[in-house]
Each structure stands twice: as structure tokens, then as C-alpha cells.
Image (cartoon, rainbow, N blue to C red; front, side, top):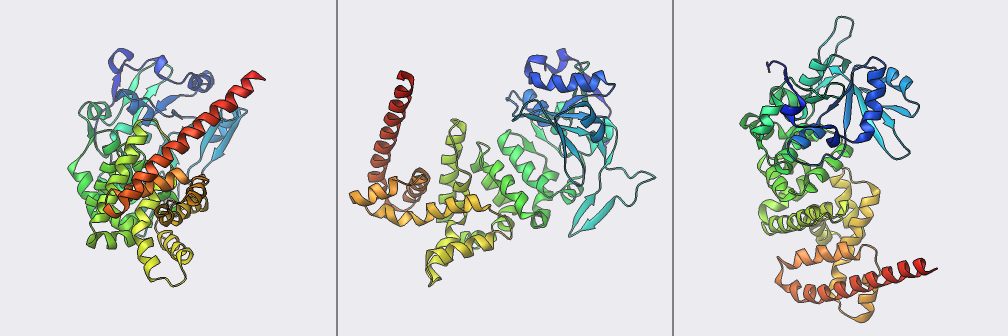
Length: 411
């Protein structure tokens, strides 16, 4: 990509001090006061220009990690291949401060590029702001707001792409995805979450290179999938994962079953539609839930053929899936609870109602059962009964909560 630097004044870009977290200036003022540059960069600028509230603010500077740490008493260097700094403004809140970096091989460096399992590995070196801009993933994420002058620096035509609602790779997509296959997932997430249009070359390259996603650490992929499914537009994200062949490499056992059992596709769609509704209302969503949904068909298949029962079926389901996406132990226990309680919803005795509603994950298990009932008419009468039961449980919890709060106030 060849383009020239475009600079936009505050009046042109419309981002003002009130749009930036005030704590950012505590860091930028220190950097600038000591002769360094300080820019707010990445998703926060993109979100502000799209009229959305940014979740976090990242800072880029020409100061090295060690120089940054000398300026701040509460700073910690993290990372292996490329070090960044977390600068804490209090015990719980920190900002990520990174040094400009480059993909360009310099004269004194050793070999900076190597290819393993179809992926291009680059050992990052420090660079200039322009080099930093061109090594990022998408143009919309490569905009730099100078916190000293208020000028927005655009090296890659990102401002225009945002205006045109276009999602475009900075590098040739085939090269970008080889450098980091997770960019394929990020592309689909940004497209669905931000209502952008991914360029045809970016989309076609994902389809051709989708198999590279299996070269990514399974531990890294757990969160990346959640980001798509909890974006508020997870239903669209799921459909795009299927269209681009990524789903079959991420959930291979589920995919094989899905090909011959379209009812599960409807189940996934309804579950994600419910999740989107909760996310967009600002309600809590359990990270385990969507994995319980996607792995349910494979678990049922194993449960039918396993002579040792549900425990062994669960174990094999998780062990098989962990080769592709590693599910942390903490979330595994919730998945097991959701699945193991499903048969209990067919029992409406008072004793069983008390038993089920005592579980902390009762609501998640009920939601799962309710969505199953939408595609299985034999479950609907039970689901209707449990709908009334869970409303009563929720009402009682609300009353108990108010009583506890009231008693504390009256003490």
C-alpha cells in the first residue's frame, strides 16, 4: 500500500479532549514533558469516529519500554516477542503504552522473517510512527491522534475508509493473514460488530486461507471466538464463520454433524439471537454458554455411544475440542452443569424444582433448555412450565435482595 500522510485538525476530525479518558493525559503529559511523542491510537479513535463509545485507550510513543518505565513508578513491561508497557494510574486501572515498531529488517538485525506452518513470523523491531502505521492490520485501526497538538495523523487512508464504511487490510490480505491468522477472525468481528463492508480481496483470502487458523494457539482462540459471539451481532458473525470455512476448522467435530443435521444450525442461530439481545440490552452473558451451544451436538453423539455415561462423554468432548480451541477449566465446569441438568427439566416434581433452582447456574441451564424447546416441540410444555417457575424464582431473589439492602440501611 502506498499513500501519503493526511493530517486532520480538531475541527476536521471532530475528536476533542472530552472524548478522551482524562487519565490518558496523565501519561501523555509526562511523555511529552520529557521530550517524547504521545499518540492515542487504534480502536479508540476508530470507535469515536464511528460514533461509538471506546472501551479502552492505547498509547503509542517513540520512547522505548525501559524509558517508559523510568518515567512512571507504577509501570510493568509485558510480552515476549515485542515488549509493551502497562502504566497503572491506580490499583485496577492501567493503559497500554507501546513503542513504535516496524516490520522492516534493519542492517544490524539478524534474520527477522521466518515461515513456520504456513505462517510468516516477524521479530518486531522499534521503528518510526509511519512504519508503525503500516505494520498494523486494518486501515481503520491505524489512526494516530497527537495528544500534544490535537492533529490526527492518517498514513493509510483510514479516515476515508471509515466514512465509506469500508474494512480494508493495510497489507496484501494473503500476507497479513499469514503473519497472524487471527486477523481473519478480527476481520469478521469488525465487519459484523461495526457494520462495515469487508473488501472482496480480504474476504476471498479468508476463504482460501481459513485452514491457517489451526496454526494459532488454541488458548488464544478461546477469547477471539467470544469477542465475535459477544459483539452484539454474533448471529451474523456465526454465519460469516461458516461462509468463510473458518467454522469447520474451529469446531471440526460439530461441523461434521452440522452438515447432516440442519436442525443444529437453527439451534445455534436461536442461541446467538438470544445472546445478541442480551448483549445489546447491556445484560450479563456467560462465556461458557456459547461453547455449551456449539459443542452440544458432539456431546450428544458421544453420550449415545459411550457406555460409561455423561462424565466420559463430557471428558472426550472437551479433550477433542481443546486441540482446536482450549476451554479453561473454570468454564468447563459451567458447561458440564448446563449439559448435566438438561434431563432434569423433564421432571416437574416439587423436590426436583427445589433441586434445580438451587444451582447457581440454573438460569444458564434453563435458557439452554428453553432454546432447545424452540426446535423440539416435545420439550415445549416443559419449557412453558419452567418459564413460570424461573419467573417466580427471580421474583423471590429480588425481594430477598431488597430486604437485605433495606435491613442494612436501617441498622
